[in-house]
Length: 264
Length: 262
Image (cartoon, rainbow over all chains, first blue to last red; front, side):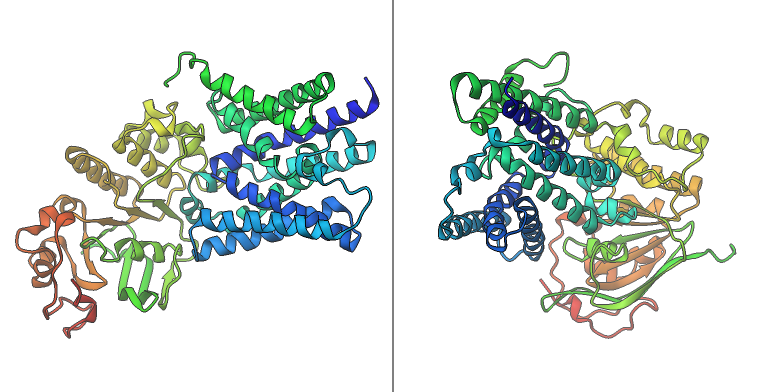
């Protein structure tokens, strides 16, 4: 196996592994569209990173986090219906990112890579970044698992029981922002949410506890990354979309199978 | 006379304003340990607003709330909306409410589990419970931390009429077992009557309050709910645009603006 393929595979596996539990939370909390909006803003982060000449992942994570905080403030104020707000900000930030990137006249700027991912360009250094980011997210997630689950079930109940709901929400958004920043490399800003949402949704079919769903989501995501890479290798298809196609395939297969012995 | 029960929480001149409308206003109340206080009132009277502001889930616009130091509150929300995508058994749901230090003894837990008829529900997914089962599980969750004060917002919602009577009875049993104070919201005085020590009749402000027997004969109460209306309060269409004398020391007898609405 050529080393670039190995790096791609390992990087993809790590991101799929962490996307499992995080994606489960996004499914449970109905954050799919919210995640999409943040992911689109990642492009703006890339532009800012290039402008200020700082690490791109860092710039993306920062922009995503800021937008997440802005979004939840606006949503809380109920100025306009949430889906409308997300629809506006999602495409406004995507367009802003595209326009500002077009202003740079970089030779090597690979717009398609940012939009749909460039898994096969992952190198050893990227891998260290991805690994540390995933480890950080995993540690935080394990630490706050129970309160996070409690606010997901019912925020008011959790608050009366003494959980700092606002803080937990912010932490979850921070984790999503970090994962978007590193996953951009794998599937690109337009497809990131699918890597978070699809394996988790597929895993629901197999699970009877939240932890089970998180674990199955990781495994299904890893399967999708492996399958997508294989597809890309043998048929020369773009890697990111191939991963998403395999993940969606898994989802449809799992949902078309009859449920063994359990209530429909 | 009984010895003076402990004061768990008291509110004075509490008001919540949204825009330029007062949702609740001039609320004075005291909650005691071991006592069941029921807030009743027509739809839109601000019952949930009152409860939620006492729980600090809502910003208040005036007045203050004093709580006993270290007060532990068990809360049973009006309803629980659970996403179907979240696989959660009753047991896991209850686990989420457990506290490291303040827990029920195993015997007490078994007793409450039995009283709430929830032993067989533990392994079931939350989403498959009936209305009554959900309420009993929510009640159990509220009891997990051995609360000093139990706050129940419309505890019988989605429960059929026989179930409602049983649930009120259960709430009374819980009070006797744990000795906690209870604040609950209801829109039906008839059913709550037997399980209540103190009634607060709310319609933006406190119209009258006192022992259930006493309140049901209060002119302010009949004004609010109509002569025969008490049994079907939820359906009662409130046309309250006349002056009335309020009862008791809660509010003085002048006309209150809060009563002037259709």
